[in-house]
Image (cartoon, rainbow, N blue to C red; front, side, top):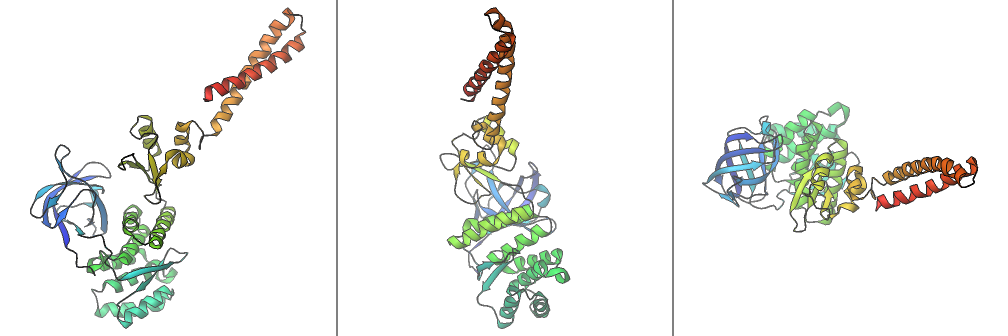
Amino acid sequence: MSNDTVNEFTIDSVFALSGEETSVTGHMEKGAFRPGESVSLLSASGIPLLASIRRIGTAETPVNVIREGQKNSLVLNVEPQHVVVGSKLTNTGSEDAAGATMIVDTGSSGEAVMETADLDSELTECEQLVNSRKHKEAHAKLDAYIQTHENSSVAHRLMGRVYLFGGQELRDEAKALEHVKRAYEAGGANDDAVLETLAQALGATGEADHGLRFLERLHAKADDAGIKRHYADLITSYRQRYRVKTLWEFVDGFGDVILESSSVEEIVKSIENGTIPQDAQCRKNRTGALVEMKDSIAKEVPAVGALFGGKAAGGGSSGKLQVVDVGIGMGIGVVLGLIVGPMVGMSFMIGAIAGLAVGGILGIIVTAIRSK
């Protein structure tokens, strides 16, 4: 495990700002916090959650850091019902991975296969059994091991995986979450394997939004390209499995995040009123490269595509418009042909046909002008 200093803030009061943002006041017990950092907290039900610090201080007098011994307010992106007076916000002074684990493969079930170093022989055998999906045998050995090593983070993590992926006989999401919570509290708060298993347990117990934050944190801090790709793929499958809405992130020319939203209505409104300029870049689910909106969201979301001239997802609208214009033009042409035709020596039939042709051509021209 890492020897990094633990930063710790104690919450003295809680105020709801919205359904997804909470303001807390309190004092810094150890270390320091800065805006943009992720912090861990235990919810009212004891579930480990992640939140990011949106702001330190008031809107009128924000500050860039709060240090040990200081008091101030923090704005967190976490639902108010999960925050209680007396709980602590913590993180470490370094984003370096502290766990003794490395991802080597991912099964189709979504269960990550881990390779673990520095384990005793019993835990090594248990790890191999879990990785081989021999969950029943692993359960028996882990149950006996935990009886004499109740504070083993690795043992509780492995037991959590057994209850998550152990088939009908063993599958129990509530027990899985309980064991992963024990792993987290027993020193696994900075262990990538614990955080990934915690994310899976949170998703399985109806807290997928919070589980996703742990996966996003792991993706953000991954240096190895293969590990980063693993987490990007895992985030995509996790969102699909637990039906978490797609999150779009918009960035301006200075690299600052303008908006993060899953609401198409909010995104469209922000583009229309100029909050998001049309030359802004965006990406989906906080993974991958930033690209221009016309090449990404405009191709996937019809309402946004319509704002770019209907050339993307809304491209069918111009075809419908042309049909309407041509129909109107032909109708007017027939009427005029029936009236004007006899006046210039044409029969009613010839006048109607001529009017029909001219009206149709005019309808096409009108559509072309309106589409520019």
